[in-house]
Length: 474
Image (cartoon, rainbow, N blue to C red; front, side, top):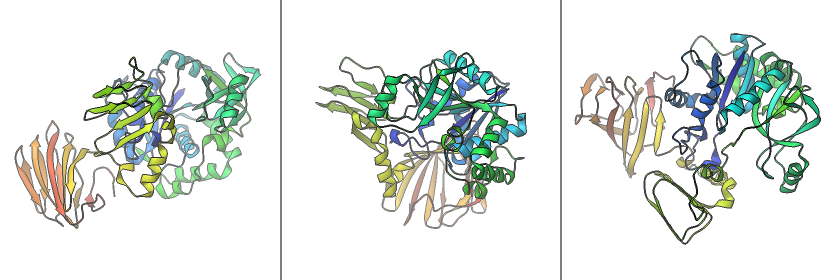
């Protein structure tokens, strides 16, 4: 039995300002209208498994669930979730997933580990590689997928294969894993023909992986098992115990297991593959014009060559420039030389060091109940557009230092305002003084859209005291 396990936890800092901590790379919508997360789900579903397990951060569960709901899957496929309280790298995540699958399907179940942020168009070629990997996994191998390098790439890890030791019809024995190399080493690897890019995809039996984890990394194995034993599993989705999980080492599955395991095989992927690791890679998905420019959104380009321009809400104009990345979002603009695409993460590091909110949040922020968009803010005021999904509700809460005025634009709203419960229709409003317990719910069948005007001496998002919440937030 093959069970795809989708890992969704990477921040994608090189794709800032579109990818941010609260809405990261897997949820970026590509030019064809689907996100990387959705494409990964569909690729896994094409294998016709009984179930698909997604391992993600607690904060991403509702975004993931909503993204999955937008694509059509066979009704027979069960979607299961395992929620991490914080990122601890791939080894703890995969180990926890293996323990989940062991309980459900036993040690003989084969888990196919898929990062959620890869792009593969050749689904048939991918399925062929998975079939080959499955056959090797049934023989007790821990299998990884290698990508034949198309250049001397320094941004990927490499796998050295033993070309003389063929395993089955498509596999090769692995000699060693190599970290991201220098340019000279990458060129040497490319010329040798023995090396493959490490795709970060794996296939193995649950029992074999857990046994090798216990042998190769006993402290990690013991810590993950302790976290699993401390995790309540009756409530869905299963959320791993936070205190126990925090005690697990932050370590990749390559370091913890794959580099030390004895029976490791690589299946060379005969399919297209990209980890969409930079704006250069994402820009390559957009057709180029005669001057080598690639454009998403509305742009006017004059005397411009070899540029990538992405605009979400407004016109971008360029004049007399070449080889630039221009990525415009409602609250942040990136302008960079295309040769520095891999270095965008340095901007995010600077923003985090400065405590700047744009490293974490977009102007439009996704919540379990819907979204809010900051329209304008200044001294002592902030204006938001709030969209609440049908049947959803915000937490019962109050604020110490701000009051709020709600105006319904469309749909209907059921409001708790202190001791009163009020039903509001379009063009009606309610004022909530600071310190007053309040709640907003949508009792209708269409989105409730409203404008919120905040006023006070402090308007930060951390001035929220939740009294009740439907989504398990403290």
